[in-house]
Image (cartoon, helix red, strand yellow):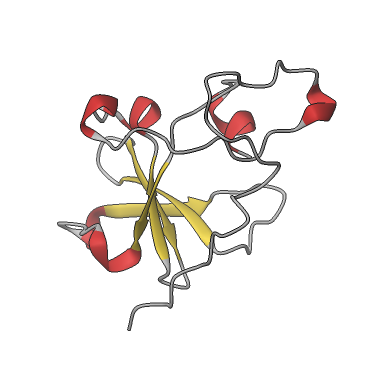
Length: 118
């Protein structure tokens, strides 16, 4: 889904526990489904209701929040270095990343969704 939204072959994405990334003024967020193929899915793209800037992905189940530095205007150098490549699709003909980080077809096998926050 990220590739279809960003148009980029690779994108640095940072996952946070839902309560670890605070939203200053949630009433000024405009929310829309993140995945057009699953509009009732758990992730929503949150944009500024005033200017339309993409700010974060928010999980309706309150497990995670996601930032995409190069798309959302954040300094990618201020984020932790990516630990692995996720959602690599060998059927697309893209060259497999060769930077020494592990490459997975989905999230890494030991990933577990956090418990939803209250």
